[in-house]
Image (cartoon, one colour):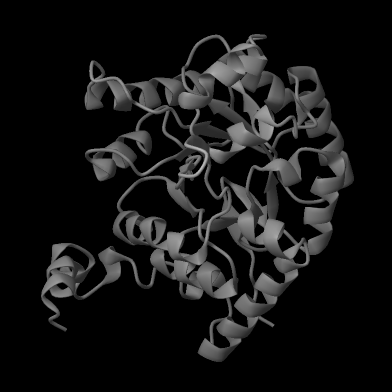
Length: 329
């Protein structure tokens, strides 16, 4: 039987399968279900900056600035630990009840005021903190440099408050993502891991009712490719760990991300679709795949297909794009 254990955020995980922050991890029952199904770690459903700053009424107005799927959960009232004190209680209780790492999560768009709360999460027993930054830079007056600077300021603010590891979950929409990733992963206030990528809340249009509606809140397997490419490009080139999320639905998707260089993989939509039992299904698929290829541990193949270890690094970049357009193989 292969050894699936891995080290993520300085935490020893029994396997690289982390349940992502979502409604499933908003209360003790969901946390227990994830742990009993075999997850390696759990990211609790995010608490929002506005909630911490006691500005709950601003949450709906902030939906434009918080364009990710967790916003929809909160607007619909699905969050159980919906205030800062209840969230601290959830952290404490979860740590007592399950034997896998509990990672707290904050969804924010600024570095103001709320960062002090991160220290309370540490005291409550959170093994690590995931900072989910997802604001829509929709102002023409805001430069790309200013947007990136905000991410760096948020990270610096949080890291100055806590000693536990901090992961930053971000989206892919930057003019020079590799440069930003490198800056976030280095220096005295570096992220311990980057989680790639945040899946932003989808909008759609009902052409019959002439209304803006919610798009599909769940990812599909085709959405794996953006994070897969960037993890292949950045693995062993940035000074922090990389975790993959979005579009991971089975054990083979997990294997792909590990081959690319990810340290951990986060799942959410596939549990909503298939139930908590899907966690064990994914682990069995990963086990079987490793046995087929003769791998005894994750480290035997992690990053094997990253660009840095490739004999043909150009194939990860523009050359493949040109081949695809011209039909050349």
